[in-house]
Length: 110
Image (tube, rainbow, N blue to C red; front, side, top):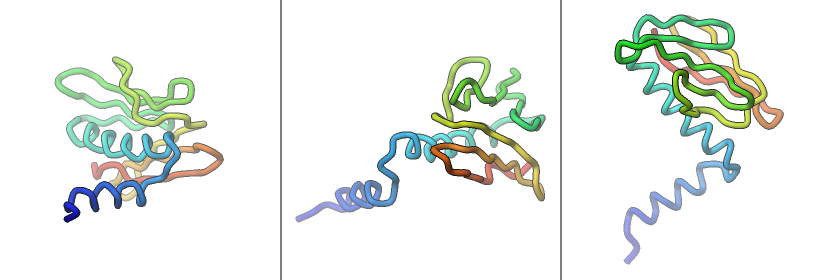
C-alpha cells in the first residue's frame, strides 16, 4: 500500500522546478510574504523595502546577486540580476530578473 505522503512528495517534485535557484526563490517569496506581513510602517523604495519588525528596523535589498534582509544576512532570493519593489492598488509587488526571465509577484496587501 502506498501512503498519501508519497503522493504529496511526488506532486511536490513534479510541480516545482528542478533548478535550485528557482525552487529557492519560490520558497523565499513565501518567507518574504510572511516577514512583510508581520512588519509595520513599511517604506517602499524602488530597490528596497524597509519596515519595523520586533521594534527594530529591517530592510530587504539586493546584495550582490541575492535579496537579503538587513540587519543580518537572511537570504530570500538567490541568483537574481535586479529587483524592484512597487505599490500597486494596495499591494506590495516585487519584480526581479533571474536566469534571463522576469518574475513579478504580489507580496502583501498594505
